[in-house]
Image (cartoon, rainbow, N blue to C red; front, side, top):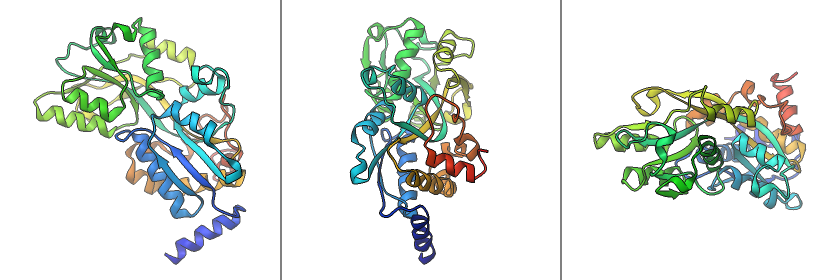
Length: 328
């Protein structure tokens, strides 16, 4: 214990932090990977002594970026950081999202790329939903308001030629609420963008299995119009990945859109703070991975995937990655 405290104090002195900054991490809903990733990261930073950190439950990407922009207060040493989908961050940074059209989020800075999200379009076998067009006339959740899931869901529907008005009922629920509603028969399908596995979807698959039913994920093929639309709109950000049948017990592997999540912070965060946070995170990856399965993809190599992208990295993070050998 004494060694841990001395190490933390040494890191604070070495980075020139006179007092601990307050870091608030916007995550997502309970049942989604963001929430567990952010909560564990806050614990790591608190134990390392580099910040007074806390993770808060939110509606995810867009909500988190608004908090970062509006609630950060450098005068009091309070910085809001965010887990976010890259397409949401791109739209916020460029003013392409309606919530940022009058004031683009130019203060966003990337600390590191986290792990890939996969777009889940979840239903169950026997629902009559096999392809995207089958969502017409169904009860569908497009994700929580202010979430990256909602952004992706509406873009997917637009590319498919479907409007939420074509549903018999549209809901706007998070992962856990959507999974509960589908399990209870109050929903036919839901959109969710999350890491693998997402706890809420895993629990849903188990719940359905106990009833003699099986979960089904609607596929998005690499050659589909939807995939091509996303790859044109978000060059270098949108890919098509595969959710293995082993993840949720589906009958077959499912191709779908995939995006690398970003961990972002405000440009006003001092360089030494961003450096200390990044260093503590990557020196404690074992703890992060033991708590969050998706964090197996959080590596030095993957962390710098978007260094030459539209949104700049924070100089403090870049300094750590250069020292760690991830960048030249």
